[in-house]
Length: 564
Image (tube, rainbow, N blue to C red; front, top):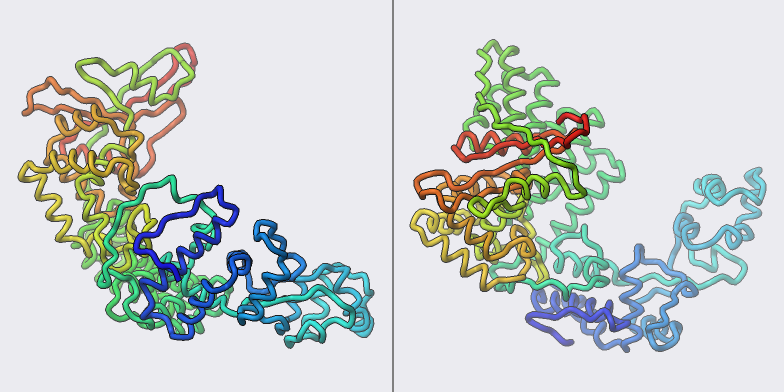
């Protein structure tokens, strides 16, 4: 077996590129997670590499497709370089395929066409009082209560039909997929059938202590939670699923996945009328969305005092804007129910707004306003969510790519897998504190410039390389005070999913203004008929509270008769 500490991706010019990528995945897991595999599983992986290349490629094609059952006559892959029948024989000889699998009626109907099925069920349909020419879906409905067991193909059909094979090791390949991707949401095609070479990836240190899975039972726990989610999606009663949710011990990233599972179970329990169970699940979940849902459910259950006590405790914590807004609405309703004074709503300053009337062009409204406002002394750039996020990404690069359990599973991550999970910041708090210390001691500028030079073009979830250039970066570092960057970055980390969008479209710099005066301002542009979104308003209010110059420019076209 060929194993690589830092594997490369296949060239799409190679017709068997998907096999090369599959070999990369299998070798990576065998190399980094061998101790989490049974000896029988390790032997299977060694056997995979010992198969002839056409057989490995055919098996890869089958693993990539949905399900584990395949008609031999439908396997048509000219790029194998040898007949599919020969490749199949090698897979059968190696124990990879079951050539006489038991098939349920449902599986049979998925594999065979109506014309193939009718002869096998003519008698059964007649005995049930139905015509033999029923449509396929109707035929299945009629037969499903009669044919409940699984049978071999020869037991289903008297006539000769295409052979069917079942892949024997699909569960092992799912386990490998989980250990490589860190989830089962991503399919094989997310890696095997894509060209990864056009990205450049940060080289994260894959040290043993940073592995997401340190024990086999953690992989088993993930798989158990995945099955619970599948049952929920299939409509299994929530009480049955609740009993199967595993306990997670000493694995923060698995615990966060369990929190999300409990959140979904709570939602479905409430839909199914299981309020007490829903409350149990939401209370047990540490997901940030679960707390608001818990309070709303307590309201509906008229347990106002209990909800009030939880809300009061929660209100003392640091919240994102959306959480604070949702909590304030609930507290306002609860106060009346428990006889407490309604808390005063926080006062937000008025937004700075103005209107420009300009000749209409084919450019976007943002570009029109940018070009109109920009001067050599006060240049304007279109940055939207790019600039502040990129400055943050450059300053905190090494913290973002810090090798900790549950963050990186393979060498092809564009960013940490836990980026928008609840504990992304808390698990890196000391490292973020060190990054922000550079804003206080003045070393941040050189750190950002050094990272900008050293990491040019490497993917980072916060950095948009194509939109950055030396001029924009220099002006930003010259004109945006470190104190402003600090509060902007701190707010970003309060809720990355929510707060990394909503920034104003434009930024105007005043590099010739004295350093003790404001040297930049942000400008949100709204064209005719457009309006501010909630997350944009929240950023604008934040700027106003922090004394950061920001305004809204409403653009209207000359002689259009359309008002903003």
